[in-house]
Amino acid sequence: MAEDITLITGATGFVGSAVARILLERGHRLRLLVRQTSDRSNVLGLPVEFAVGDLADPKSMETALKGVTYLFHVAADYRLWVPDPDVMMKANVEGTRNLMQAAMRAGVKRVVYCSSVAALGMAHDGIPATEASPVTEDQIVGVYKRSKYRAEQEVLCLVREEGLPAVIVNPSTPVGPRDIKPTPTGQMILDCAMGRMPAYVETGLNIVHVDDVAEGHVLAFENGTIGEKYILGGENLMLGELFRMVAEIAHRRPPRIQLKQSWLYPVASVSEMLARCFGIQPRVTREMLDMSKKLMFFSSEKAERELDYRPREARHALADAIAWFREHGRR
Image 1 (tube, rainbow, N blue to C red):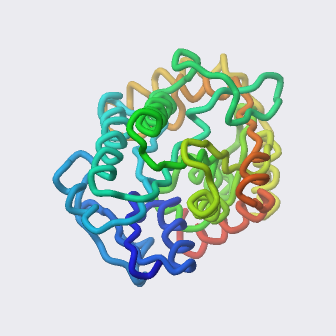
Image 2 (cartoon, rainbow, N blue to C red):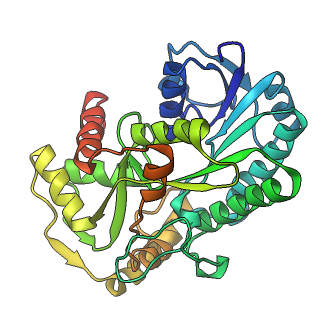
């Protein structure tokens, strides 16, 4: 294993840096594909080599893949709102397809592709969805979710038609340390922990520790079946319950006002307009409100059964996230 090179995309990010740490513990020799402008603070001091490139630059991918035996594709444009959807589609769909084709040309022996539960179908009445829950693209709300659905379909097509040796993992909502941007979920937890969230819209989501997601990637590499999908989730929680847990950990008062989605659509429209004018991320969008109407509950039973995946309770993930934010002066 030490002589083989494992390439990771997105390794400077939240999930990717956790995957890098687990792989180093398992004895992998790592090469990280990073952009020239990437913030490398999440991987400082790690014994890795860097390949400067971009998923939009096929030549840089060819260079990064030279001599590579294994590939973990974790990079993605993850935002809940973008002014130009084509930018996200190009990064997540075309970038994934081009990288997978380059990996096959380079003779990569095994690929782990990080998809998302966003690409999966949703069950009804709060029943946790599985890898087999039916879905079509027209049922998927939001540009990010559609991009991940299309990218996953590209990978599955390459597995079926061209023999791509890929295993797919579908993380739910990762939480924990090294959320440097932070992610939309991390920002929500930070706002609640700082007492800056007086109200919320009720919904349901699945919270998982980012280090458990990373462990799941490596278990899929070691034990997963080519062409199969594995949900890497944790604990299903209502959002109000999540905020009460965050507030208890942070010694704050939880938000007490529960708003209806219908009340916020005018606010979301104005928020999006201001975001377009000033180049900022809106705090609420119409797509966010549409997504909140469904309980995003998922089951990791397949990964637990086939990969020996064992996620910890959500409280541990929340506590580690809050501790990291405080340690790094996030306000």
